[in-house]
Length: 331
Image 1 (cartoon, rainbow, N blue to C red):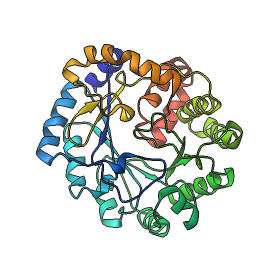
Image 2 (cartoon, one colour; image 1 turned 120 degrees about the vertical axis):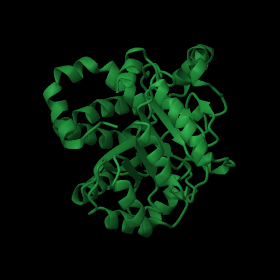
Image 3 (cartoon, helix red, strand yellow; image 1 turned 60 degrees about the horizontal axis):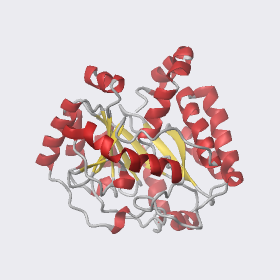
Image 4 (cartoon, rainbow, N blue to C red; image 1 turned 90 degrees about the vertical axis):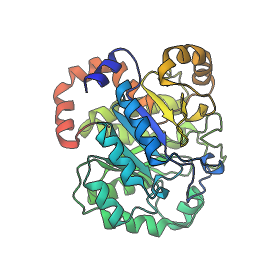
């Protein structure tokens, strides 16, 4: 923890977004990752990476894809990071999240995030490119009663297709089953990870009521989330975004072990041993991206919010402490 705190003070990454595989069992119109070939690291290479990341000061890892549950050694991968005191969060579409797999995750201090963008089989297929709605819903309901050590969350990517009633219904489902709930705006940026789809591109007026609703809810029971929803509203409105925090608070590790500034610049290799120099080299690229095509992926942006609004967090320390007791670690 001291190394993590030291990194925060020195504005060095504390989170690695690990694309554990590019393979995926869905064909989402909002994503390009599944189109690429995947060169997945074997477990012993992941062990070497985790050891080095911990020494660097990384405290958190998002294990995503592609679809991470396609890795048959997923639990072993989780254990590697836990052994090196790096807290994992598995981000999944839920198709393969059966009771056996979820039970293993539940035994560990590992967070789980299941994407559920919309209710209804027909709409789900349009969103996800696959007729898997019934399977995902069945899995969510099956695993819900399992006692777990980490936070389990349902997340919705909000697009032009999303209605406020959809969000309220999924929120109700999450609460009734003991899950947390969060939403994120649809992002396509440069078309590397996020893919532009005209059916999903929203106007501010289309989705502002959705984020306003979640903001008002969060102000009552999830103060840290409310800070993020405030910035979501600025983002969807097209306002100038704060400086991107890629390589400041997070980096990406690709499935082959290569490091990159973020998922939109996966082709730009960096090294944690020369991160200071790499950050200077790519500063203009990231600044231009942030100015012309800003994103709001749930990586560096959300950590950056916490740092930029640290005085508000301290002022509302009682609320935050109560939330931490209720939900545990923010990540």
